[in-house]
Every structure is written in C-alpha cells, then in structure tokens.
Length: 410
Image (cartoon, rainbow, N blue to C red; front, side):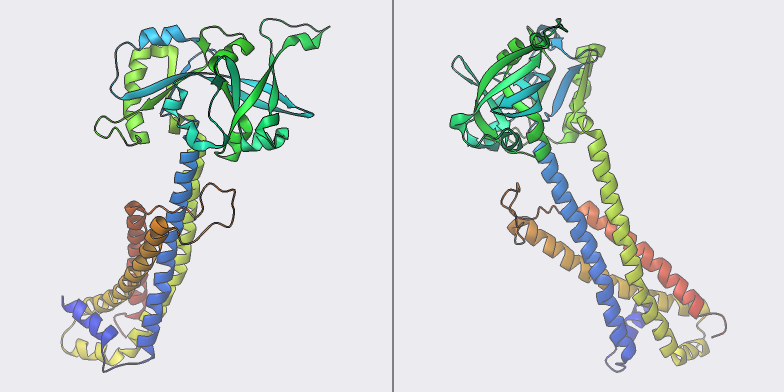
C-alpha cells in the first residue's frame, strides 16, 4: 500500500510538474498503442479464421465417414451398422465423388463430380449459397447440375439458358488402346444453379444427383462418403461446435468398427487449420516484439525519474529505508506506467474491435467478397494472452532498470 502511495505521488503530483511527468505520460500512450494493435490484429485474424471455416462448412460436414480401404463402400453396409436412432444425428447424406472432365463449347476443365442424394440439402443449406438459378440436382426425371462461380467463368457460361455441360468420366473395368474414346463415358447436363463459397471450392466441385453419378461412374449402390449433420439436443437450433463433433465421433467409430474412418471437420483439413494456428502465433509474437520495443519508453521515463528523485532517495535512506524498499517504490512506478498504458490500450482495442464486430464500420472495397465489412471476432482468451505477456515484460524491464539504476551506492 505504501509503495503504491509513493508511486502515485511521483506520477500524479500536482506540485512537481516537470518534463519527467510529460515523458511518463507519453510512455503510457506509447505502451497503449501496441497493446490496442495486438488486440485488434488478433481479433481480425479470428474473424477471417471464422469466415474461412464457415466457407468450408458448405462442403465439410460435422462428421465424414469414409471407407478405411478403397474409394467406395456399399451403402447398405453402413445402414446395417448404424442401427437405431441417434438423437445427435440430425441428418445424413451419401455422396459419390470422382474426377471428371467438363466441356462447354470450346472450353474444357477438370473437376470433382459430387453426386448427392435427396438428404444433402438437410446436411448443407445449399440454397443459401446459390447466387444464380436454383438449387436442384434433379427436376423430375431430368438430371441437373450446380457449379461454382469460378467454374462457370472457366467454362464460359454467361447465362443459364445456354448452360449445357458435357461430362466425361473414365469407364471402369475397360481399356482400349485402339479406341481411346471408348474408355470414357459421356453425359450432358444442364446447369440449374451457380453457387458461391470460396474460390478453391468453386473451381473444384460440381454437384449432381447421386443417381446420375452412379450411372456415369458405374457404381451401383455405392458411395464414397457418408456426411453427417449433428445437432445438440440442448440447443437444437444452433450449429454444433467442432468440440461437440469431436466428443461424438468415438461413438460412431465404435459402432462402425475399423472398416470405416470417422473424421471431424477439423480433422479433414488438419494441415490447413494447423497452418492458420501457426500464422496466428506468428502474428502474436511479431506484435509482442513491437510491444517490447515500445516498452523501452517506460525504461527511459523510469530512469529519468530515478535521476530526478535522487534527493528523495537520500531522504528516505536517512529515515531508515533500505535499498530493497526504495527499489520497490520505483519498480511499482514502472508497473504503474505500464498498467495505465495497458488499460488505455485495452479500452481502445476492445472498443474498436466490438464496434467493428457488431456494426461493420470499415468496409471491404470489393463487391465479389463474401462479406461487406472486415470480419472481426473478439475473444477473451486473446485479451488475457496479451495482458499476461505484457505484464511479464513490464515486470522484467522494471526490475532490470531499477536494479541497474539504484545500487547500494547511489
């Protein structure tokens, strides 16, 4: 308590306004700006991470079941293994995927054909991603196809009225070196809708009915994956988290055995999410380095204050104060400067982050982007990491400065 009174008097005293007080105030501002910048940077990164994950969620289910060996499996096998109703499984859909060649007029490109059944729209709300036409892969007995915006641009499709696409797939169990064209199966489909997610997905996937994919690829009663949409019985209207899916995955693994592999969304793109984590830590440590450099302004202010208070130190020594007590006064002074800077930076950083998160004031100057404003997500964990790291830096720098400036003989 006594240390705090000394430190406050040296910093806020109205009777001793000097250049040292001005420098201390500037040190507070110099420390506050990097703290605010770290909070804002981490929140922006969280926003883009959440945006990317939401884009991938259009094609990555909560749980994906694939065969441990081979590319496809008999759908009747999974139906027999998954007996009974699971209250946590809201919907499931079989899909069949394989690489195909697409042709429209004189434009050709490769793609991954994903054949989906009628339950696919219950697993993924594809209607929310359609920007042109309608979401349908079958109109009565007529087969249809949905493609991404980037794929439509590659194939030169400018209107759904002229959107017939020829699909080529390698014929299974047959090969002719004399007649190479006989090695392929070709069908023509009309595009019913164009979806928009992320560029990589749009250039990769085209969606058709499961029946069409089986006929084209020569697979009967088979699929390459079973996609499962989960729901939390306690909050049925909310989308489940990755942690919820991770906790439920062992239940399905036990039921399906070693024949099938059950993976969560994060496990499907483990390398991608790992890279994003490394990038966030990289941003954190680079910002922390800037904060350390800015904290040296506190070192300068503290050193000048010690020089300015030489007579006070002599007086305290004459009154019986030991060197440890005197050092503690100035260490508290340095921590007080840093605490004020951290508080000011927290107010600025958290305030700016929450305003952007809820009101989206700063816009992205691009009409084709998926969001109109910069995505920002504030997390208390990031704030705690910034403050704890800065507290450690402030304590170390204050201790080193005071230890070197105040020795047994001043």
